[in-house]
Length: 374
Image 1 (cartoon, rainbow, N blue to C red):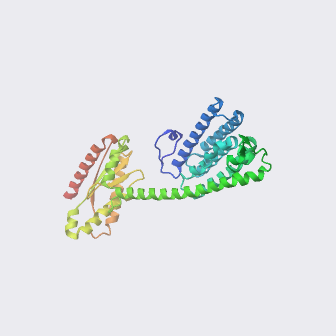
Image 2 (image 1 turned 60 degrees about the vertical axis):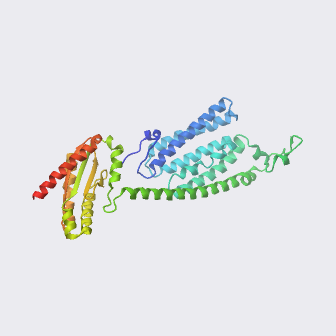
Image 3 (image 1 turned 90 degrees about the horizontal axis):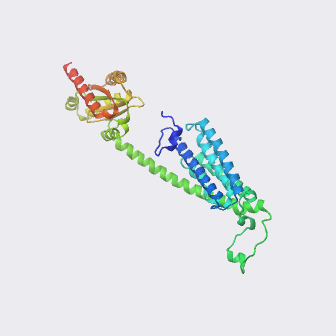
């Protein structure tokens, strides 16, 4: 099983079969992008372009950098494969958003829901509710801390809750009384409504995610059906051609094993085509019984099969054929029709795969000739 590495965060397309590993890599990538954007806005603040109190911004930015160091250190210990890594990602993303909200207050309203968006990458309802809980907690913390220590939000201080025409007269602002009871009013006017909006967004995004998930599952099923041979359960010829046109040429060494069913025409003529189909399926079953995890098998023609073994050599190919013969003998022991097949193999570099298949084909036919002589 391929192990995830840190260099993969810089690759444009990355995918791992292990559960949540790809999502963990994308979470790290997005986390880094958020920090880069945070750094960019800090530079704009220092240059006087993004105008807020520089000292307040600095406190938040330094806190974010400390958070990044702790996050990366913890991630280095856990690794991308650990089941707790996804919770680590969501926790630190929520903390980062909260720190930004505590200092920049109303400038960060739009990023409140980022933890929920990140959690939607994972097919895990428990993680989604965990992200929702952290988001609501972050709203409460950033509202109160931001009120006292962050960039002043005049709406919170003066509790403006109507239009400007009701709050001004002859160019003068009518409100001049500061919020006297922030503990209650901030909860009523800000924490509660923002939490409700967050829950509404969570519900909507969850439904959208479920629809997308079902659509993707349907597409994957259709793709799977399009590349699987119905009779044998092996990959079909179209999948083989796709594999040959893909990254197979990068394989430094590959073994190809070629099979052909013996006496299929005789079985069809003697027992009928249904029994002939059973013969093909039985041979395919024997091939699947000896197929290693890194190998792939295909129904190449009506009664022909090919197995591709990355990093395969003569010894590996001969061992597979030896085990296959035992498996075929076991399957044919209780069959009313004769079950046999001929096999041949060849090895070489992946960039010569078509030549290797041709060599394996010739060896198979040579063995088929020996079978007829017997």
